[in-house]
Image 1: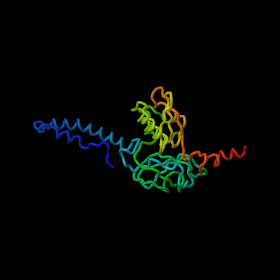
Image 2: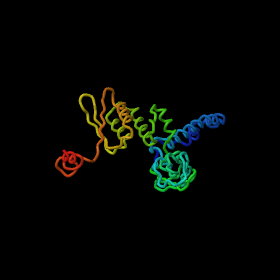
Image 3: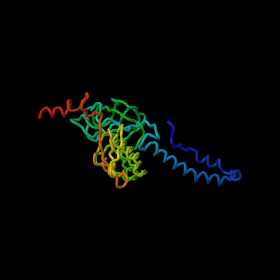
Length: 272
């Protein structure tokens, strides 16, 4: 995967190569230059580590850490308690925590450490905790910010995680918020943010008089209040926003499909 931004790994060598001939023999000057540029190299290394391993998207990395799992284990095992930390054995250092159990059987888990060296799939074995036999499903891999890392990014951007919001949902909010911070309420921005927040396949916009828009989407509403608030803030000043979820199920009058002769309305009509 090619990096949209190329990392420079040899700042010192590049700086020394640019020294004019008369100074190349001045060892004290060359050493001073190296000591200064080394700090630049250290900053570059840290920034790219953050970019590649603690980013909001996969744009800058193709890592193999665990970034999404099925919260319901493939096999809940036995003998576990809430708070048990399990190591996912396929790769290196990936950990999940037990959030809920029923009579020792795990019913809900979440990611603690993404680790590296993992692949997507079901039935991934684990070790650790007070029980045995638990396996999980890894649904996505990469090197993204998780947990507290996401919370810290949110503090920087001024968008806190709402109560009970998962990493996946919060990451979508932050991605959308970045786009909003650089926008001026354009229609394209509204569509981008709505698509990201709802994980929609199709979004569209319709203008209505006077000064409002209707946004249509076919995705998921993770938190209705949060979605409405963010979209209102993304719109230009004085512009109202109405959100309309849509589906593939079209109401029909006289063709096969849901309509007056099929589905809910036919039942209502026949019982009156």
